[in-house]
Length: 89
Image (tube, rainbow, N blue to C red; front, side, top):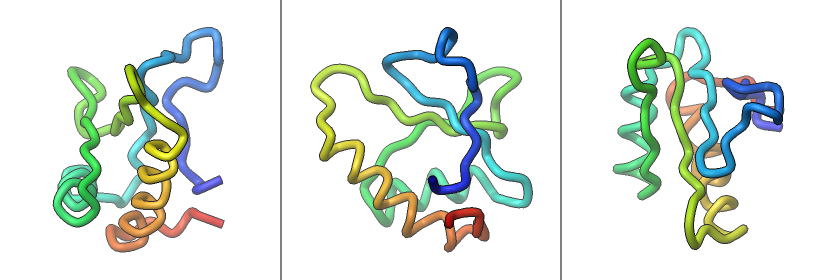
């Protein structure tokens, strides 16, 4: 609902421990990940290998609660517009 695109569209291939989301064009992914960490205390990971700079990852393994996930979504709603993304809505 935020207007972001998942890397994996087919649930068959989706991970149950991490969600990879494509970094929208014209958005500075490194700045975004840094702002999430420094301003919202939410640590995201970037992509690896050929996905470096193209995705960010949200981990949700172990003792992750619904409240933890909501905290990340709330932080996304704050930071995404600050880095030039206006696809929400």
